[in-house]
Length: 224
Image 1 (cartoon, rainbow, N blue to C red):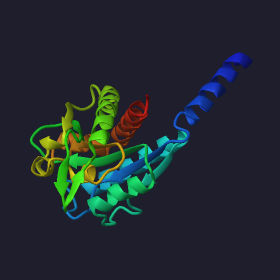
Image 2 (image 1 turned 180 degrees about the vertical axis):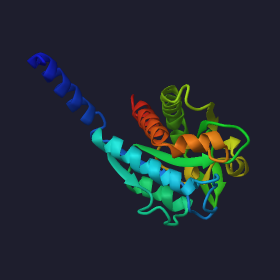
Image 3 (image 1 turned 90 degrees about the vertical axis):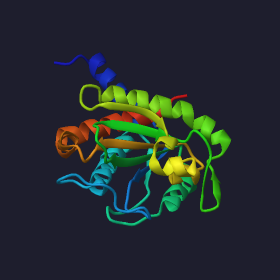
């Protein structure tokens, strides 16, 4: 039989966990469809579907920790332009925006991206220099914890500048970063064109591990 002190400790721990993100607003952006297309796909899964499912799993976890979670779309196939996605996070005054994507490449694993300089698209220059400075340590904390949770499960391809992406390299930053007025990080969760990565994210165990890692990353990013 459990001792009263032990039970009280468990209850206190549960209460602390449920209040860990109280007052925080998190915007989750399940990638695609947007003006750039419907995303990549593996042999069985689409980026569109994986991003949507993972968004739901992370949302559930963050809400249990007391956060208010805002999604950038209301259904898997809803088309939302990248500018509008950023505006939704801005309007919610999100403390953090997490953009979820899957990659198409010759390698395996995950990577995180954040703006390191201002870019320009549709006549808009952004994000602000002040926001870029704010994002850097948050992105570093996010990726460190995110990668730690996935160690031994997927390859860590690192924390990278938006400039390392095809679009970011042309514009100076990703569109979602340029229009953002809140801290933002984009995650390529897996290389969906790699059979092993696809199998990982197709499994319930893999989906759960990814959601746990993303959630831990968000919590770490918000630590001051």
